[in-house]
Figure 1 (cartoon, rainbow, N blue to C red):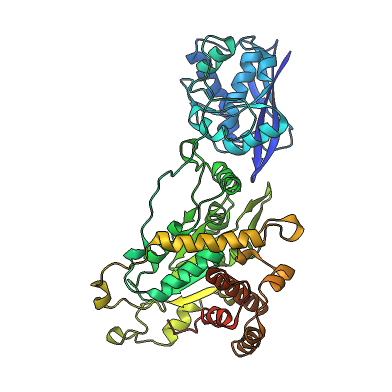
Figure 2: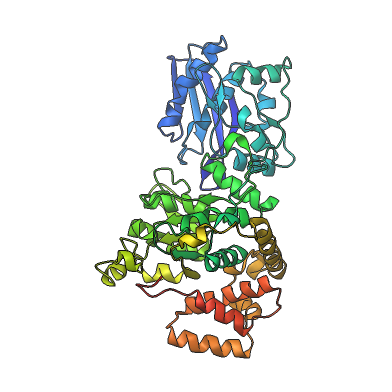
Length: 507
């Protein structure tokens, strides 16, 4: 007899069916796991053996073969422990094989029989719902799996509790869906003294999902401004929350199995590698740009990042997706992010300060900013200078306009965009002006005649690329949305042009 238990494997955010087949036959006592397992799967033999021993069960002195099908698919991770243990229990007659066949299972076993958390429970639950199965997962992740519609979820804390459930002596209660970050608070924009131009740029960037670069001396408030951006963004809607949470689940970053409801804000250190930023590694895990999907990726001290890592961001910033190709895997992750970056104007940071004059200006600024390539600069919609705050400004009372009031304007502008682009090209829903391309951009961001003449003249004088031209139109469309205007006018074009790239040595 061969006992069968369903489980899954992951390729990016795609979920693949895997069947665990367990056979106990006469012969020399062995315990073999076949089907292209990695080291973690091969080591599951000892964890399963110890977990069964903790329940008072010993493996029969027979030839035990565990096959993970399909055999040509690499099996990675410790989540195969639980389905292997269930297959053994079914093959030994401890559990009814027909009841286990109605579930997919994943979980890591401890030596005492506890079931520990694993990555990918949420996408596995969604996949189980699509295939008409239930799901067995660790107790701490039951709230994550419960979001999948129409499936039975069993979330035991131990292997013994699961056995007792199937025997009817200790019925497991269904887990309840959980949300993360309920009641979370963010720093208020009113804490920023002065910097009215920068606040305006932050509002525009948040309203349209535009990329933003802040250039200014140390201590001018660039990081403070970026940290207040999450509090200005509208929360994720249910579909977006599921989309973001699936990526975080694959990465093993859903805390206590609770779904994300606030937009991600990721701020990796400038020592981050290419794999850390865009994804990769042996298992091709999602990088920071994917973990920030539908949120903000903040890169502080932008020129200090490795140049190859920054260049690797060019394609995701344009397409909203990362494709990681390796010899053993080819996976794809969503990466629709809003890039917010900050940098000093030169290495010392005091380029325009007469009291601390840079001795190598303007060459210092040119060399420092040259660490960032033109194509990367060209993908940033808003470039602003953030000057040093004057001591007199620090003594002023807090600003009257708080984050809540600004967030309301941003939410209204985004609502206009969602309604306008409800059905985008090829049936794809477009959320913000930053995502609009082609014919839709021409239709909805076409300026009036005065604005058109200004844009054409400025594009010629500023030597704007085609990308720069279209990104200026996108920013102008956002400015019109903030004003509640139906069309893009000359003043919107003029303000959008004022945010194009600063020349080296300025800001």
